[in-house]
Amino acid sequence: MEEMRRIAYETVLRACGFASLAIFCVMIGLSFLPRSAFQAGGFLSMLMTLVLVLKAYEARTKDHRRTEMWLYLPKESRPPQAFAQKMISTVMRETYLQFARWTALISIVMWSIALFFSVIGL
Image (cartoon, rainbow, N blue to C red; front, side, top):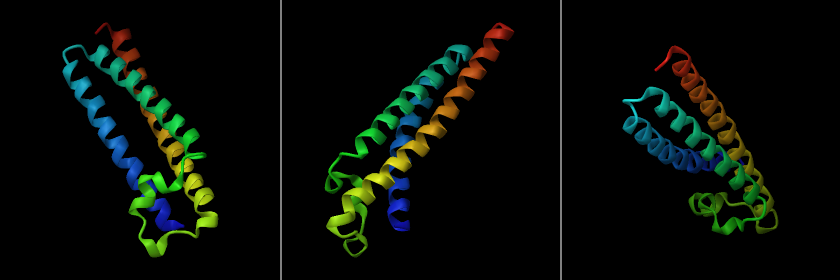
């Protein structure tokens, strides 16, 4: 079970890393307007949070054999077919929701920084 959590964490972390890179590139493109850069970062982070929540909702019904985690699990570590769907969907759902919480927190921080820049007049 612990190996499943590790693999789920790695797969979601990689996907969030790529999304974060895209958000960072947009923010760098708007770096000449700091308030706009952080507003865009906050908005895109909220969008990523929404996608993660939707993925967590979808994880309950998605076929476990079609998940990236299933492909990365060594054959000897895979759970029996009778329990695989429930175990994998539970692990993936928890992982998606954990990353959604972290991303929501990052979005709040970015919106707060944008508000700060707005208050000081930038």
